[in-house]
Amino acid sequence: MKAKIIRKKDISGFLDRLIQAYRVYAPVMQNGYFLFKTIKSGSEASLNYHNTKMSPKDILFPQSEVLFRYQLDKRGVEIDAPAQDERDLVIFGIRPCDVRGIQALDKVFSKNPKDPYFEERRNRTVIVGLGCKENHNGCFCTAVGGGPCADDGSDLFLIDIGDEYLIRVISDKGEVFLKGEDLPDAETQKIAFAAVVAEKAQDALRPCVEVQGSEDILTQRFNDPVWDVISEKCIGCGVCTYLCPTCHCFDICDEAVNKEGKGIRIWDSCQYPLFTRQASGPNPRDTVGKRMRQRIMHKFVYFPDEQGMLGCTGCGRCVIECPVNLDIREVLNILLRTGAAR
Amino acid sequence: MKNPYFPLPVRIENVLVETEDKNIKTFTLSFIHKENEEQFRYRPGQFAELTVFGKGEAPFGMASSPTQPGFLEFSISKVGVVTNALHQMSEGEILGIRGPFGNGYPSETFKGKNVVLIGGGFGFSTLRALTNYMIEETNREEFKKITVIYGARRPGFLLYKSDLETWQNRSDIQVFLTVDQDDIGWHGKVGTVPVVTREVAPDAENTYALVCGPPAMIKYTLPVLKELNFPNERIFLSLEMRMKCGIGKCGRCNIGSKYVCQDGPVFSYAEILNLTSDDIF
Image (cartoon, rainbow over all chains, first blue to last red):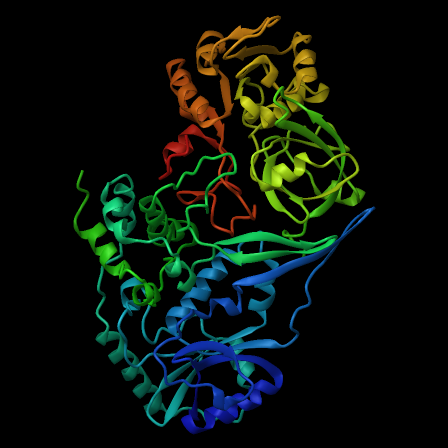
């Protein structure tokens, strides 16, 4: 694998050059926390962060998006696609857990029939991942098959080696992307040092739960009353699903004034009671327990079954931000460790 | 790339009040652009998302058969925002349609076999489509004995009165109509669909059973079919879940790892028993 070197103090200038040609998303500090934002200058970005409060999934799958505009007339209806931003995108400094989140969204939206909105943006996106040197409260990527320096899914991957970043060139797209930049090749010892950094970070984050083989246990416990017990304190706010890098549920709404309107897609959540309620009344998921069961089963049983990967990346946002301190790691441990009590 | 989220424009050609309470109407729609009709090739049991512009979309099974080209029919019960708006609409007005979605009834698997179609309420609409499909001149000989069992609360709640009459006048299809509560002039049976099924269902040998109706009807009909020795692989159910995108992305219609909008809405009972499922019927 090719590797390049960039000095930390040169990152800002590097981003400034990127901004000329791309729409660049990078972590930006705002109101005391980090978010991925479109930057206008390299100095706005900071790579010295744990993770962003929201996952960057909204870059490819916006929280609210116009699917089409329409105009009704006597003869019918005229439907137009919204204009797309013509610049290619760069997601710069995204953490490995969130790259996996994008890989999960790829499975959903790029599967036939393809989602044209996601697909169009995704094909024009370069992903520059950033390895984690240390983990923080809530992190559990190593328990779900990821790692603090897992570079798969990134086009380029940065590892902090002191005053410099080692840039691993992962994909052809990444290689093409770096073409115009005159960055030195990494020396063997720096490549080796980056590997040590990665290994150390990996070792420091012991898996907190064993999810391998959990599909069978969770499926066996589908009708277990344990779900009602676990979900007792859940208030159904849905923040876990909004912050989750893999959650992809949405609703399609219609907004109109007179004869003109638009079809809009907005994020939705399986944790809301109306999510599955039919207009005629029946609701297959009519309790908090059933809705939490859906969330856990989807991530750890259905998604692997359907898409061949877990629907959880261990980013820990749902753990950190849950208003009633429901911890998905504890939930899994209860479900997987206490056995099928019947 | 064809955009699966764009509704195709259709015009309401006719609106027919089906039930005595006037809460179910059948809408006849035609495509405004002929090429869209070509794109929209469907099979009985599939569904579409209808758009009432300004109100939103909702999913409905096609009540018409693809053997009747030139129009689509949907029987729609007035229950929510979209369907209430639809019921206010009349001939000449414009709707949007996306689809067709889902698998439909697996008619090729029961070619050369007997078929019993068991429906209740307005869940009967896609079975009506299938019946019309199977009895169409060129298709009829593909299937052996066809039996229809269709029930409603009262005679005034049976849909498709003219079709029922046509079918009853044919010798190559047996039709049993039943109501929970009869009226003056009612010549059919009185009793629930499961009870009538036990009484009139054809021999299970070489027979496929197709069931669509309200959850309670499905729940009590399944044990009857088991009693009559129908194997799980030869019982097909059309399931209902709230659906939105129709293409397996929006995440609301899953039953276990299956999306009703893509893998269904028609499943064999054997498949359903293998799913980890919420209470669906």
